[in-house]
Amino acid sequence: MLKYYFKFLLLSVVLIGASAVRADAYENFFRALELDDAAVVGRLLQRGFDVNAPNPQGQPALTLALQRGSLKVADLLLAHPELRADALNAAGESALMMAALHGHLGPMRRLIERGARLDSPTGWTALHYAASGADPGAAALLIERGVPLDPVSPSGMTPLMMAARWGGESVVDLLIARGADASRRHPGGATLVDLARASGRERLAERLGRSAPR
Image (tube, rainbow, N blue to C red; front, side):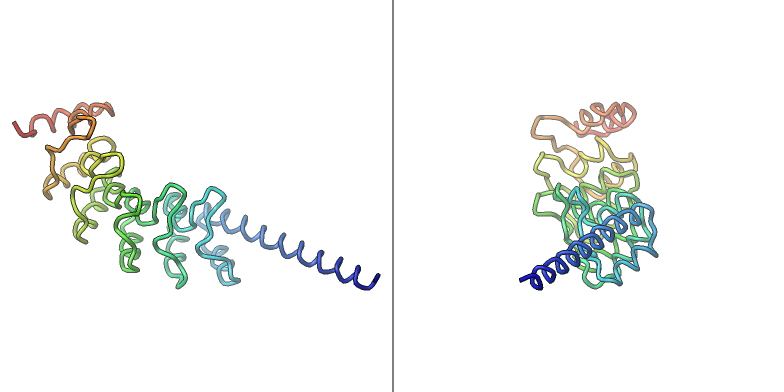
C-alpha cells in the first residue's frame, strides 16, 4: 500500500511541475510578444507552444501582436503553418481587422493570401476597421480585393460613416472617390456632416457639407 502511495505522490509532483512549466511558457510567450521579442517567441513555438493561444483577455496572439505593433512577432506567427488566420477575439475581431485598423499593409496582404475572411460573422468588415484608421492604404487594399464599399455594421455604420467619425480625412476622400454612398444616413438620422461634428471635426464637416448632394 505504501508503495502505491509513493507512486501517486511522485506522479503528483511530476504533474504539478509540468503545469508550472506550462504556466511559465504562457507568461513568457505573451511577455515576449508585448516586447516584440521574436527570438523568445520563436523558441517557444519550436518547443510546441500553441501559435493560436489567446491571452487571458481572449485575444489571439496574432491579433494582439498587430494591436501592439509587435510586427517582428507578427511576421513569425504569420509564417507558422498551424496559424488560424480567422481566429476571433472576445469582441469578434479578427487579425485582419486589427491590421486594417492600424494600417499594417504587409500583414494584411499575408493574411489575405492565407485566405482570411474580409468580413466577420458579427457583421463588421475589415473595411469598417480600415476606415477608422488614419492611413488610406489599408482601405485601398481592401477595395482592390473586392470588399463592398457600403456594408452596414450591426450598429448601422458604413465604412464611410466610420471614416467621417473617426478616420483620417484622406480615408474619407478615398472612399468617396471610389464610389461610397455619401448621401446615406445612419439609422438614427445622422448624416456624414453630423457624424464628423459629433467628433469635433468641424473642418471635415464643412468640407462634407459643401460637397453634399442638394
